[in-house]
Image 1 (cartoon, rainbow, N blue to C red):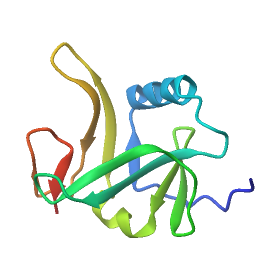
Image 2: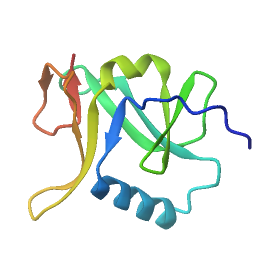
Image 3: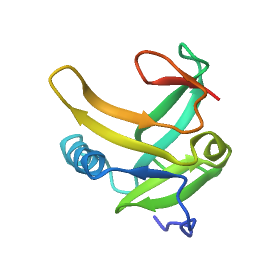
Length: 117
């Protein structure tokens, strides 16, 4: 599958911990070739929007980015809500999972996966 050109400046960043975990998941889940990391938002959640994070194929309305060697697909309209966001991986005793540090969020819920802007 031929990729389209990569947009120059990715609106998000991935920490080294997130990249390491994503690469492990990519291998463990045997993600098919041509799939990348989908980052986005959807309506719902405690605060109005929920984050989307998963492996998917590129769609017509997606922007394509390469972030720390990871192919990232994002609907172009989602970038305004996610610009400057950092995705990290937390592996502690009390919490384990991806966390979203979004400077555009005006309010977040306690679980950290829902926000309003």
